[in-house]
Length: 314
Image 1 (tube, rainbow, N blue to C red):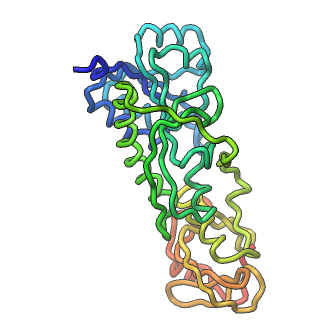
Image 2: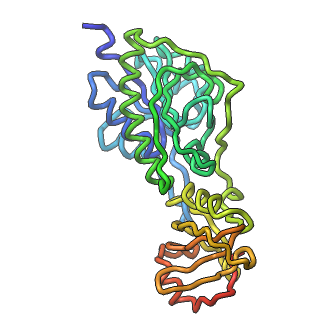
Image 3: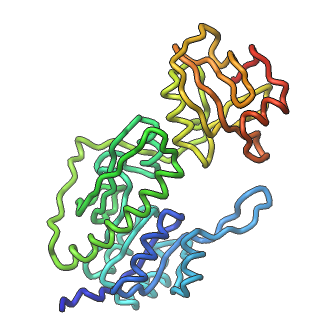
């Protein structure tokens, strides 16, 4: 039996995306000796402290949990050194400092939902949807001190279906990724994988989503508008303005019919939905939300706002 059938692993992650991978390692033959996640942060209008999804799950599983405010803190690093770890596993976290990367005996492995070197960065799934990708991938790679640039270990394909929104793709990729990660760990520790350098000249970026990226502009095609709405649904939500109020849109279908009206103009209304003019085409709106209020079907919005043909989204 190979000596790595029970490797000592330190897991590092933050969001819900990381949970299937954490669960997979916990239920495996490996020894999870600790979990690192970000410190609790204030959130929402009430400014209440909120912990990460990985923090919550680690507490449910009674796992040793570390929340350093500084990854270079000597006290934190000494605690990690005492764990005698073989491997660090990273899923959805920030860049790790050399001081931490030097600790594990056999290196650190990251899971990233794109076919690296494409879509390096914090938001690969959203930018894949925005850019009309139909086939992506999930990749495991060796962690370096540069963003998503380490040698590739394994990858598996990820199909992006026509109506996939970010929420669906996020959940599906996290489950597929956890299985890929588990295979990678065993094969890497048993020297059954030959790491491959990334071709940096083929790299593309997937930067963190900014507020300006969420704004819907109606002077573009229906395909571009639909992709933006799918990429930010259910969170944080692509938005427009209606009568000076911010309005998030979560679900639309494309219409190739060009009504020859002004961009953003409402050109058709029925009991269940309404249609907005965009460049050379139009989109039918199905689900929306006023800021600070619950999501609603378009039928509710039509009744509550006395919507009229000729009204505008801006």
